[in-house]
Length: 352
Image (cartoon, rainbow, N blue to C red; front, side, top):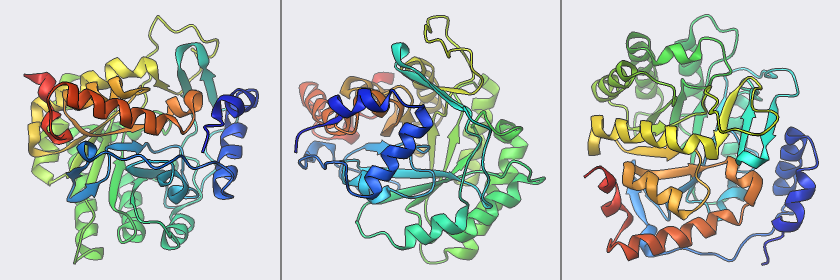
């Protein structure tokens, strides 16, 4: 089926970013977004987190916060989809406007603040899924919760049996105090608390537990995260969330809006953190690379820096869902051109 986004995309970008996003979700829910011709390549198949992935291209958290279109996005060619961030109780998030495009920079700024319909609504939708495919759930805390661990444990109790993996989001810049959970002692308390909850609710097959980290970390923070992850049995790290930094190269008029910056300007800092975490952890814990990917070369760079899987989101705003299959084709060609027989062979080779 032809890619209609070159026609629809410019029209959507005439709308307020959040209105355009809501319209896209509604169209996906109603089956109004054309599905591309299936494309998979054996060289892209990989096994990570004790799961078999048809390809390593995932949808990052933030696009489908409430599990409305997980199956529809898998049908667009993604190898996996991550929903959320989901909070235990419903909350509206920050006041609008709270999402801003920086089109000339291939970027966006958001300060959504964990707007969420809550775990019960998400659990109901996940329980009604009809399509096979890997769907992870990214969980966060409610804004006014006194003890953050309680929220992550509460969400785990509801969602552990429905998720192919769980992600602890401790790195969004839009919830006050959240990033402090990346501190060694706080992180240790959080991870062990959730691990205990997982042992209670998923005795037969516990979903893998991942941690999503920020790009704006000091070296000692990275050391702490690596140490706690290995000590506590974290199954994977996602590097990285959005950044609070503002590169001097930005030209978009919304560049100074408060919130997290995503898209092309995030590629270099997020890949640097990914590479640094891989040097600390190696193959002991798989990494998922996210931040600024807009083509197969970007995805390949993340993989060579140490990522076993990658995720995209912001680039979809500017290129549409047809981007997924384009990245897969380009990535497969790059792997073969460098003599790799499989994706897993390429992981971390840029470090040598």
